[in-house]
Image 1 (cartoon, rainbow, N blue to C red):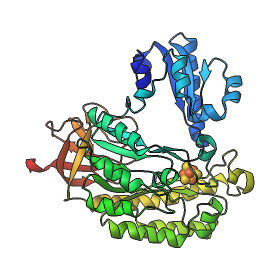
Image 2: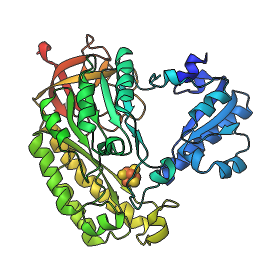
Image 3: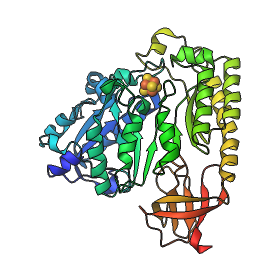
Image 4: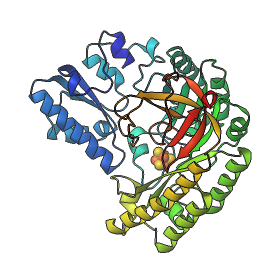
Length: 427
Ligand code: SF4
C-alpha cells in the first residue's frame, strides 16, 4: 500500500460500498483452510459483480489462495484482471503503473488504528504439521534481518504506533535460519529501545524449542506484554504424533509450568484443534482435562479440515464425522467459557494501564460484541488483551481519554469476554 501511495494512488485500506466507484480493487486472499478459501472466493465474486456494474475499474487478486490456485482461478473467473502469488508485490505495483521502490521497503501504510501495528518477523515455516498447508503455500522459514525490522519499527513509531505486535508463522523460530540461534529475545530487547514504542506483544509462538530467554526478558522489561500466544493444538501424545508436532504431553506441561514460573501472572492464549485423525474419545478426554487444569486465560478452537496436499490429507484417514467434531468443539468451548469468565472476574478491583483503541459514539467496531450503551464508550486494551482476538476493557464517561493514548484504570466489572473499568483519578 505504501508503494502504491508513493506512486500517486490514493489508498482506501478497507473499501466499502460508500467508497465506490474505485479505479482498482486489490484483494489479498487467504488459503489456509476451507472456510478462509470460501470467504476469499465470495469476496472476489462480490467484487466482480461491482465491476460488471461499472463501479470498479480493475479487480486484482493476490496472496495465498491466488498463488496456489492461480491457473484454476483464471479459468473459473476470467473477469479478474490479474492474479498474483505471495511474493509478487512488485508485479502488483507494476500492473498499476508503479515501479517497486526498494528504498521504501521498510515503510508501511497500516490498515489498523494508527497506534498499533503488526510487525512480521519472517515468512514461511520449517515445521511440517500434518494438517497445515502453510509451508506448501509460503515456503520455508525466512527470517527478516534484524536491522530491517528495527528500521520498520522506527518508521512505525514515527507514524504514531505505540504497540507493536510481533507475528510470523512461527515467531519463536526467529533467527535460527540467519545465525543458527534463536534470536527472538535479542530482537525484542532491541525493539524495546525505541522510545515511542510503549508495548510489544508476542503472537504465534511454537512450543517445541521455545526460547526461554524471552520469558526472562518478559519478566523484567515493562514494555513487553506479559502475554504469550502459543497455539498448542493438542495434548494427547497419540494425537501430537499424528499431527507431527514434534513435542509431547510432558514437554507441553513443563513449558506451561515454565511460563507461569518465570512470569507470574502471565496471560496465555492458545488454539486447540478437535477431530484430528487419531483423536479418539480417550484423547479428547485428555484434552478436556488439560484445558480444565491449565486454565488458559484465552483459548480458541478449530475443527480439523482435510487440506489438499498436506501430510494429513495424503496419509491419514479422516474418520471422525463432522457431527462428532462439532460436538467436541462445542464441549471444549463451553468448558473454556467458564474459565474465561472466572479469570475475568478475578480482575475486578485490580488496576491496569490500557491503550485506548476506539471511542464509540453509535456502533461497535466490526466483529466486536460490545453493545453501545448510549453514552460515549472508550474501548481499550491492557497488556492482557490482543486486538481482534480478545475482548476490550470498556470505559464509559471518560471523554478525556483519546484513542491512541494510555490511561490508568481500575476494573469494576467483567463478563466472559469484556471488562468494564473506571479511570483511577475519577474515583
Ligand atoms: S507451525 Fe504453524 S504454520 Fe508451521 S506447519 Fe505448523 S501449523 Fe503450519
